[in-house]
Length: 330
Image (tube, rainbow, N blue to C red; front, side, top):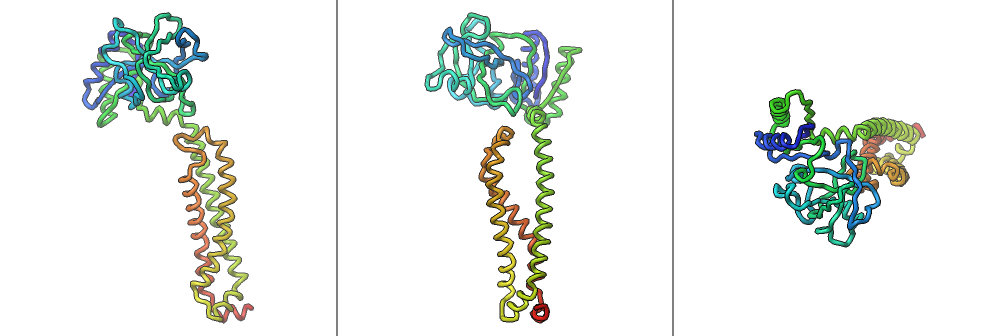
């Protein structure tokens, strides 16, 4: 759940405690920015006194932030309640930051500076990558700092809910209204933020699926018409075969074998073209490669099944041909 407020630090901490005590809330946290929220904060970073070379995403978070969002800590540790203003400054970086600036070196214990503040922050952990602005973005180098050590600006609250999300949202509204009358509250699930980020892709996928279904229907109609015409032209041939002792199963294999051969050739050409064209759509895919074997196999199975469905009526007509009618046609 996401709840934004611009209250001061003391009220934010008190509000976080109240949210964590709500029935159904497993764990809660706060941060400057939540993942896939459509916004991000960037800061200049210096490592060992040298510029990192690009602006880095920055996020002030409370303890248990990574637990709420189920973001694994790859190495080191996350923030705790002991990371306060009076304790040494610490930071957590993400994997993208680690790959960009450290590679094979261990980042734990390395000092870095953020923004114009000369006071150093010591890296104590490396977290898994997440995206902030959009699912279309790649994970960018990110530095996390404890909110208790650098509280600033509006924050968002996150809560891992067990049970009814609607009931939890109502309880969150009630708490904020009682503590901060007049403050505008926005409560969203992380799933809804992801869906909003992917609305363009969903629209394109829906349109592509609709056109694909229409194309498949036209292909089925075409196969049906072609095979029906072929059976009509070969009525004499089929009648002679059956008069000479050909079994229905043999005639069925003859008719279906022809359409299977055409389908196989078409699939090979189509899959090759799809493999080439999929590269252009790779940036729109999430958790799926452009050459995903399961997708290609599933498409092939669907096309074979569609071809067989279209071929069955003409094939049944072929095996029901009376040999005498076939001979008269000949």
